[in-house]
Length: 284
Length: 125
Image 1 (tube, one colour):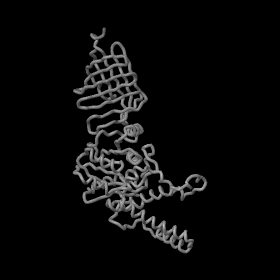
Image 2: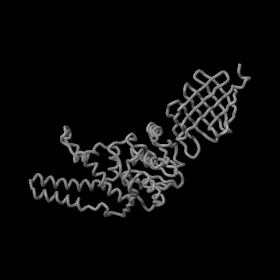
Image 3: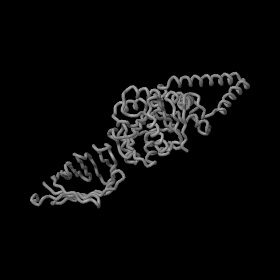
Image 4: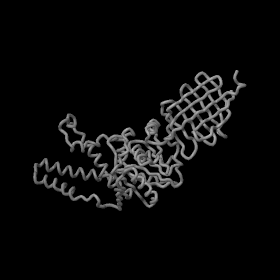
């Protein structure tokens, strides 16, 4: 199986390393030649691709707009699997299916990353024990999904979660995008300076992802704006309620408010499916 | 200058014989020869050698001792660049021609290449 990863950032680079760790040869491609050369001469890839017509599987590890541009402007082998890894899925799926194609598209979203970017921070174990989300629609070829699922297992993923693009975007607005928004908003405070000695795990958890690349994340937020704005509104409402209770000095009201949150958290069932059909396949 | 070219590849393979044209310049030399129907050009410039092949197989490869270079595959199943690491590169020049010895890794495979271009006696003045 000839595999190529287009886009050698932290995710694409880590995919190459993970595939090679599993003993699979992998070629790469990157917009900046210097990065591809780095990958080649550091054993991250086996070759730099000039074109993509010989590959059975092409993982496109680029930002959303660049992913669509890449897929629309390159030729692929008849029946090849072309899988993107973008953090939004409805927009990508619509863009891909607008055009006739000779390849089998599979939407993916590896639930792993770091607060830093570039191939220089890539690592072979980035996906170990993480989830790979694979999205499907009526146009999805399930043999292609199985192939991507198998490759995900080889990359170290602990599980594959299959769902529709819409289910993905709704869930990810909350589990990922809202968390990044909160972290960004949280650090906009004068008290951030001079924190040495005043911080613990809670501060670190809250701020760890505040420094992510705004070009990448703004694109993701805007392509999932309805889900995300709904989640932000819910958060604002909850924050306002908490602020009001604190401002009033109403201990009983504040406790009630906090108790509500604690009980919701304690009663959560991570495996519960509330929206759409979600299939989880555990590898380990 | 017309010359006879002998290429020794792996231990198990028989050497390849060909005829070519060898020209020296200030910085090195250029050797043109054929392998089957494919046209090959080998240029030595200082301590770097570039080799290109056109025809059935199409590739450009650069060797420089101790350095990471690439082999650009222009045809075949996969096209693109694969890594080349040259462990040893020796160039011997004499009035009767040139001989090069290259020990390199192409992808993960180690290759020893020896090529001798011997100028036809009638060309030696």
